[in-house]
Length: 237
Image (cartoon, rainbow, N blue to C red):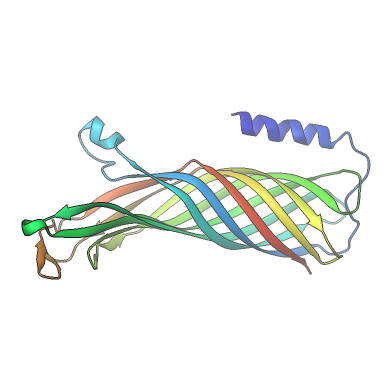
């Protein structure tokens, strides 16, 4: 993967620099961050006997999120470890369901996921006391569910999906004071989870329009493979 090769090259180049980042006796930091994930896919029939239906998906792009991370830097080293939690949510309108007399019931589809991740960091030694460059990678678990709504009725989650995946990242920090800095990161996360939903009754009423639905549980799968851009406010403690 070109992105991973780029991170490896950046790490090797970093060892050519002899100067260090700002010397500080602070080992813990807390970051509040916002994120934008460029793309993901929702597979509505992942367990179908038809290969064509299993491969069907609709894209969900530009997923906004926010999160928090606690990071520990090992004293007198260029290594750190962080534990983070994020929240991502997106829904989009899909093709409405048509009924008699030209009536239509709107359909909204998407997902919500909470990634919990552990990341190891290597802080690349460079010249200067303001700008820092780092790279990292790790693994996480993802707690997600599909959000599927017809009209005003949402299919309840009967089995929330828990996924597991890996991630790699590179970042740039800009230090303003001894305790305050900004981080900008580019991240690749391989996130995947399944979700099972179910309507409790049929038909669904949208005003005076009855919509016939199945009350059988239905499983779906969410996969994100887009780039993630993050911007964070960091406080050293």
